[in-house]
Image 1 (cartoon, each protein chain N blue to C red):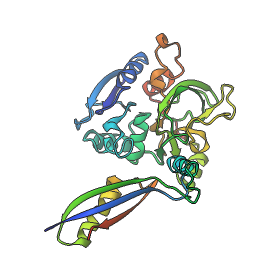
Image 2 (image 1 turned 30 degrees about the vertical axis):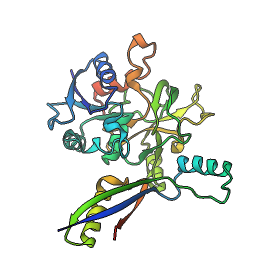
Image 3 (image 1 turned 90 degrees about the horizontal axis):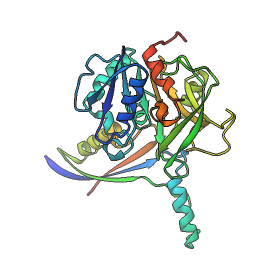
Image 4 (image 1 turned 90 degrees about the vertical axis):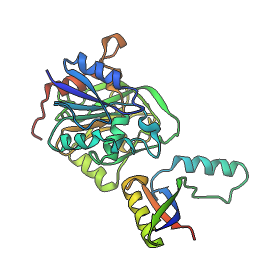
Amino acid sequence: MRRVAVVRFPGSNCDADTFRSAAIAGAEPYYVWHRETDLQGADAVMLPGGFSYGDYLRSGAIARFSPIMAAVQKFAREGGPVLGICNGFQILCEAGLLPGALMRNSRLSFVSRPVWLRVEQTDTAFTNQYSVGQVLKMPVAHGDGRFVADEATRRKLEAEGRVVVRYVNRDGGSPTEEINGSVNQIAGIVNDEGNVVGLMPHPDRASDPALGNTDGLGFFTSGVAGVVKER
Amino acid sequence: MTTFRLHVRVVPRAGLLDPQGQAVEHALSALGFQEASNVRIGKAIELEVKAANATDAKARARAMCDKLLANPVTEDYLVEVEA
């Protein structure tokens, strides 16, 4: 059984979904309030979606300095698996645990709809139960989801196979419409070591069979399997 | 120690798409202000800083920008001390 710490910030609103998804995957999830400083023996950490601190200043900019984040930083740097979903991804970028940043959607509107994703990298702590090229259906719900990074970082991410999931069409081909303007249709990335993953779409809203879609469950079963292969 | 009033401007880095700026530029054009171009939208932050002198106050504000007020990946900033 893997102990999964689901961190709650003021303004988190996908904490229960993430908790439930982890439980369905066979983990033993528990909540950790952002004011705490100890991860209580976590095997994996998940930063859920929402609007921490009301997205004031920039999405994730203030949450990134919450007391618990020092422990999350240490955990991640020691190789512990950390998953950031939506606002959690924004927090990981602000914290410097993942490169790049998430900016306002190119069309300015909040996008809340199902999207299709192609799995590009399976040698990560959270996608090892998928296969490369697999197409997943998952909801997105964000206003600041446009992934940007400087040219050098972008090239590095692509060259090192660190794009984890990309927005595609239903059939896995290039999308005909823009979701949020992300460079190279990047929906999720992984750090150099393969243990920190962030993505804008919501696997936590696509894990419970009661919701009619379990395409996202693999993120949680991967976390439980805890298999990080050598890349 | 003197209290200095500072103005911090945070703007999206040149070259990065600024959809807000584009939308406002389009609206200005529709209102007859076709002479407006290169509209960029950022944030203006005003704050007071206690420091020995204006140079120190500015240095502290720049440190605040580096740590929190601006994102080095996407934004540039400008700090001015009110005379």
